[in-house]
Amino acid sequence: MIEEWMFSFHKFDSVAEDPTIPQGVVMPPMLPDGFGDEWYSEGDLVYKLVDKFGEEKTIDIINAHRDTYITDDDISLMIKAGISSVRMPVGWWAFCTESQSKSSVIITDPGHENKKFVTITSDYLTSQIQRFVDAGIDVLIDIHAYPGGSANGSYNGVYPETPQFFLNDDLMQQGLDIVSELASFYLNLDATLRDHVVGVTLMNEPAHILSSDEGLTMQTWLGDAIGLWKEIVLTAVDVPPKMYVNLIETAISPEDMVTFMKNHFTQTELECWAILDVHHYFAWDSNHNGCTDGCSYSCSDSATDEGIANINSIISDGAKSSHSYWLDNGIPLVSCSEYSLATFPASNDACRGDSVLDGMYQNQVKGFSAQGLEAAFFWTWRMPYGGSHEWGWSLKHYLGYGS
Image 1: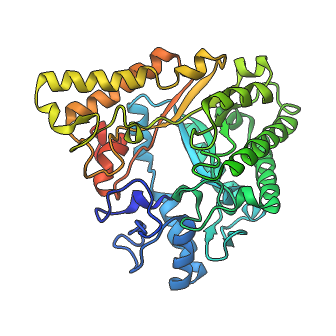
Image 2: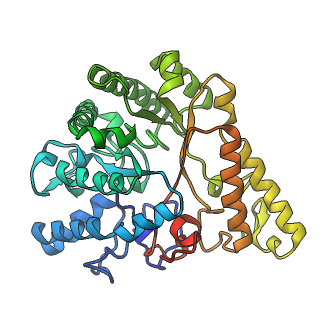
Image 3: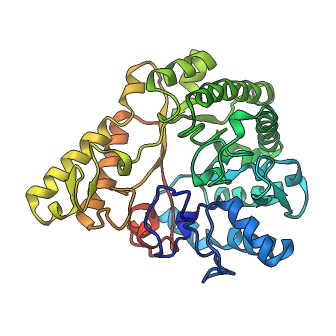
């Protein structure tokens, strides 16, 4: 999955999207200096590449990126770092009809004619899962984007266009077809590979910053998607992969998350494989964030031992209680499939000092562990083209393995 801010190449510093500012600049390895146009999202990037270079070269550009972004050396470093699982975010273009072809093709988003994608073939996706499994790393498959856009953010694939998924019955039906294709893909994997696909997320941050009506529609659709997944998979395998049901408080209240989980899963399912997954970012937490000025703490506070102690106390407080509400209200399996070291959404104003970053890393790991979270996934492994974002968002960079 390609997100524009991760390729901003020192020109932009905001993680939060701006519909007037396309922050994507480069697309390595074939366009290391860009192509004379900036872009908002993966769909916007591909559309502009097709307009400039034609379909054949666009497919080459995107596939070259997919082939080289995570290298074998990266996987070796993950093993060295003790990583046991990776979360693999992919767009719906990995589970559409065209994905069954032997070669990638260009498809147009059904909700926005000015957004296009290069399909991920089933064979290619299988080969990427195989790479991790061969190294002893399990895989969580996460569908990060849906036709027309199912959340308001550049990861929806169609940004800055208005998301249409929860406003259009045809798109929502296509979404169920995509869930069905994911289920078929999983069941058709070799048994060894299937054993190492330890989880699936049917939709990432559904209905994020959309209307309240769309939030309610999302709950109905996601419930239908869960039912469809269970109907297909539970009749075919004895032990299903864990389902990470990702929900976000910009679309559904914490109380309603509890109700949703209890309405759609049995107690046995909740105890065995149905996981409530809630992302946690200090960057947007006004009670626990850090920046150059005007936050819960100032980055300059880390210049003294007393200041560092105060910062660690603030971070620890937020990390120890990040998911406690759901655990205390009868949801036995809870996870965090996205967290980072970022202390502020504008990376030039976020804290970069080792003492703060160490506090962010260590206190979150301890806090998540103390709560007994099922899993925690760092977003993301590497970000060599993200400029100032790299400090807070690249685990590889933080661990001292370079870009």
